[in-house]
Amino acid sequence: MEFIQDYVTLLPRLLPPSIASPLLTLVTTLFGITRTLQTHLQPLFTRLVTEPDAASILVVVAALFISFKILDMMYRAVLFWVNLVFRLVLWAGVGLIGLWVYNRGVDGFVQDVQDLAARWAGEYEKYSGEVKKYQQDQEAQIRLQAKQQGGRGWR
Image (cartoon, rainbow, N blue to C red):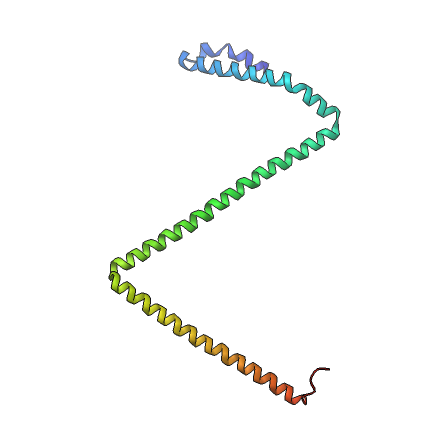
């Protein structure tokens, strides 16, 4: 801090007064704050150095506090991007549906939606029938295996 005091006196000679005056005020204010902090925090630092138990507890608490703050910042950043993506997808969907209605008209849009619903219902019925057929085949195979074992039941 002493080297700053040596060079502060050169500021008015090297810089124009419009820059030197605020800079001089800033440096003297910061120097005063540092001196005040040193005088008030010196007993605390001395106590921490002389009592290592309290110091280690404070270091752990400070490390936990800092790590939780960093974790909270990362959580907020991830939530921001996820929320942004969801909103973009939502508004893009609204825009696409609006464009679809604009191009096809309301009646064409309703007809397209009905056609899509009918097609999806048909596909659902098709796959549902296949699943039922597969389940029936499995049940038949289990019955056949039970008959081949002689119907002995549980052992």
